[in-house]
Length: 215
Image (cartoon, rainbow, N blue to C red; front, side, top):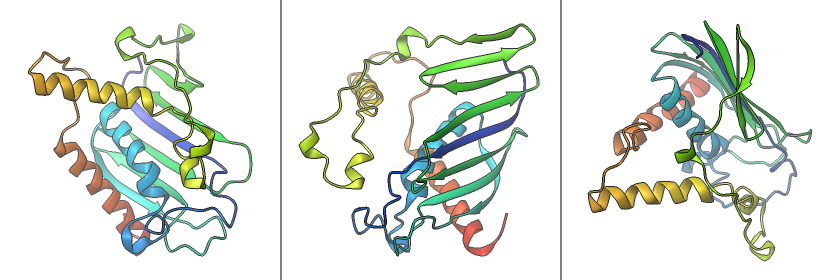
């Protein structure tokens, strides 16, 4: 639908950790223990990019400290990247933005553009703009948030919406089917340890770029 992908944008600004007293586990605020927002959030974006657009070629990154926390680990990241297939893009996110939430996932290609709009994916091309319906096999039920008395710290709020429940339930179903030897679909392919290593290689490259000013 998009032709050849050319430019990709992945952006998320949230106020979750904007307060100077925002409470997180000690390891999360410590760069020496690889805490911070890069690993917490960008790891998922990297996985999304690799799944939809292909493997990374180069990155150029910054890992700023936006909130006044005194942490050694970052609460934001800015990454410009090039993929092996030729597409370029940017990942930007901050957990300490006091302004309104900002979200953008958008891919522009030679024949069209796709973007997320709420819980919909929309496509624009020479024929106009339309929704791209979610396939029935990917649909998950609406989440129920956890009980309020379990939400104590800012870190708890990271997972308080219940949005993770549906996808993780689907992941557990895939594990079950593979263990039982049942047939599973090839697309999307189930993640493997190789994917985990590939994601970590990108995260490590981002950290090296930010620390040494390298591409």
